[in-house]
Length: 142
Image (cartoon, rainbow, N blue to C red):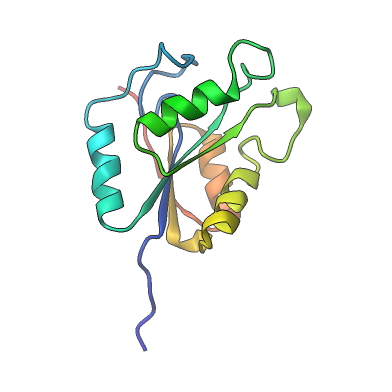
């Protein structure tokens, strides 16, 4: 019997990975890198779910809202959005490198996290991926 190794989902970090730079740009200011929307669609055409997962401490500081981030990210074509809205000092379970966002998506979509890919630009993205056994891709800005 052949083992099914098909990728079920891709998790994409926001700032510095799909657009912007290594600083936070709030909804309305954020710009995607060329080709991001098209590549999200290509993955989805192959039956792969594409999720945004991002730490956004500005929400806890009252600088923007979780709803604004969700609306913006869904407009880029994501199937679902997972956001940690907490400040680092809150020591929550969802802030990367913790894994609650990945685990919630696995529960929501019946995923095997070993058959998912995490793409991000920071160590926290890679550590979260490692903790759940996901494949990982580190991108670097020029």
